[in-house]
Length: 52
Length: 327
Length: 132
Image 1 (cartoon, chains in turn yellow, red, purple):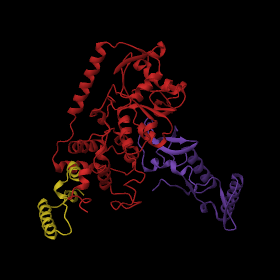
Image 2: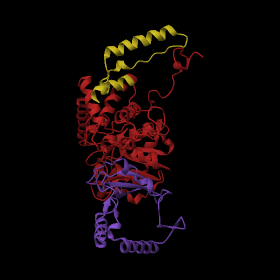
Image 3: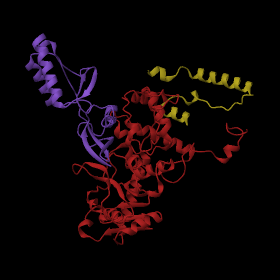
């Protein structure tokens, strides 16, 4: 729903991600965070900052 | 069962809908079926329409039917509705009552709803894209015609209310049904054709943030919303997102409210009507609501279905992959 | 519950509002669509205008400080007291030593009278809260 909301006002929905990671899944946590950081970097600076 | 009715009294009969709604209100009050009727009544002059509680059967002549005024009756039911109450309102009023009821904002047993279909669409953006003109979710669903009222009782409550009045049942001419059906189709087409949004994300962002930046934070959209029922508003309470007692920055204010209300927005347009800065808030909510309806399969205010995120499925409770399962 | 048409008391714009009156008490505010000034819109102050009406902190009678404590007095006593003091100050220090603060909550006529009174005393010191 948050992704849809952001898309409606024109912010890339890819900037939000929801994952279930157990406290036992350290490697998964590291992998997801690394992936997500790359994704957001690829999207570039937030468009919100540009309009400010 | 649809009936086409009018009153026997010749004088009243010249009123819109053959005077049937006035007679209904009078009869419900006179018979003690309800203590009060909430509807629109004439204020200082003919065009000044205000919500009013009518508690005497003699006062029904002041009722103003089928005219647009930007007040939400459901908010008055929520805040001041006591005792046995009948609400005679537009489809959006009835839909809002239905949604409030789901959220325990109202006492169901004491409320009787009489919906009147909007015959003309007022020149308001939200009305132009309205898809629910006929109040089929009300206890009594009425469509006003020139010399009579098409009425349908959707349950026992509605039938009982209709039974209190003395009406003359007319045999409606085929033209009346045809004209009504044609109007229905025309308005549905108008709603479907309403252009929601076709801009690129960058244009959308510039447009909406430009609109948000106009906000003077009067809280009018919150105050006028028929669905805002929280005693402790998310925009004022200390819930981490916005610090309690502080006013959120304009963009956060609107995104927070959007996230909080959009799943149940009825497109009634009260927020937009109250906005001193002319921000098309209702359009934004409606847009998001349409998309969320497609995702969750929930349309607010048309039936008894609960809104999304309102509870747990049994499946969710036992599912190991969710936060609450697997313990 | 009934709706009573009124004018917002907060500033000189004069927006129309409907006071929601329940059991002889003002409990809420609704913007008044039919009013030509605001056409059904209100600002934050207007939306909250009902809150001060029955607020326990609201002054309901004039107060004069006697022996370090504020005491409720009648309007006659308060006006006599003020007139005496004003006359005394003007006589002793001249009219320049007094000033007058008008208010956006008053009508134009009331503010005109205040300004006139100030000139009559010979003081140029008139100001008001809307000059922010």
